[in-house]
Length: 217
Image (cartoon, rainbow, N blue to C red; front, side, top):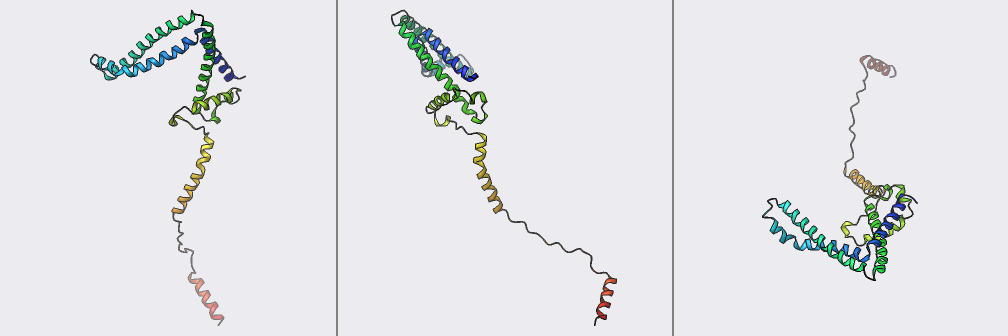
């Protein structure tokens, strides 16, 4: 096993142990508390902002106070309620079942966490990933889980795994076609004949040539 395999096992085991100690009801209600706090913030943001804006002169600061304040207060209240319900289940005869379901929930959550982390590697081409990721025994399983999660992402968030070499190979035919098109559009350079600057016959050479012609007549 390499460092990635060890990290995957540690994350999944810790998540399972933590959920077993807290119980399924508390774990599920904790998630529900965060979701509920976010929903309350969405619906209560504007009314709270109208109440905070006259007190705070800065518009951005008023928005931060309204959003953060509503979320924190809602989360605290919902956490108190979920904790009370979880203690009721813990003290009942359903405690063993609650812990068992919590352990299973923790395993599933750990797998989800590591798959989400592996999904973030889509920002890096496979060829650029370090060997301890490529050679890990858990990599095929993580890749399968990341592919499943990718189906739930919006189309604009999906990232195609393409290495730099593949991108260059894909662009090479287009670049060659563009160069050929430019060569066809560029007129061929015409060569201009230069005048012959070699020296001609001198006077003496001309006289000798005339004498030679006269003797041959």
